[in-house]
Length: 363
Image (cartoon, rainbow, N blue to C red; front, side):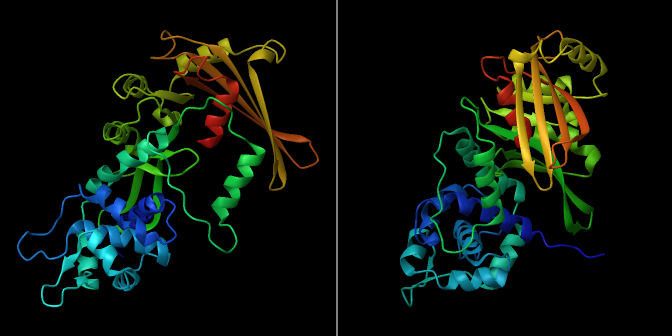
């Protein structure tokens, strides 16, 4: 069985952080100084004796190299790092050769050995707080300079969403909690399955934990949220995580809001939501938001209606909602219908139907 290297996930995470830290610099290497401050808390797995190159230098060069080179080859990282100007190496604390007086970069072998032995959880802990602060608006989000060439696919999608589905005023910062199988990644223990908190809109990973398989996803939520500061944010989760324990955790210890989906695993809450939301469209006209989408050979109408709720229905509950999606062809004929019910801890003054519709779409 092939065993994948642990280097790739580490480098990917560092590249994501470098993208956020690039700020307005015309040269991504200018971000190295601020990036080094974020990575200084990661523990060094190497023995102190014989250590020459500081860990923060290795991590900062790796992050900036992947931002520029565009791949996670260790050889490419080393080649890019070898061209880093002396003033940049001095600023990030690179090792200085006393004989030549020059600052030197680590060898390719050092890059490979350190990245393979790095504690990925420690790296997550060091950078997730910064990412969460950016998502919550406490720290301004850095902006990459414009570069020549066509826009990337995700940039085009984001621009399309901004025009066709503009964000309503009054949204709170939000993140989705979900699990993902890393396809093509195999270790001696089997395939890698991660549960992560991912910022809405940005796609930035605020924190993540590895679990054995899909069945362990539900138990990982407390671990993921335990290492994050997401107070005041909205956390969206699917029906697998709709438990009273999770609801109490989010509204209590975490001091955040939840948007949960109700299905058969919560039959009493589901039946109560159905009863509260039953009625004609006319009856719910003032408590409904409708969104229409057209593209990719089909049309979709999303109609979300809300009704008030309280703790007797679910811990921390303030509203229930029904989301109906009608899909069809470009001729406007509706051929498919799907209805889901959900519950949120946000009262009506914090989230109306238009806001809940947006949170669910972003999830």
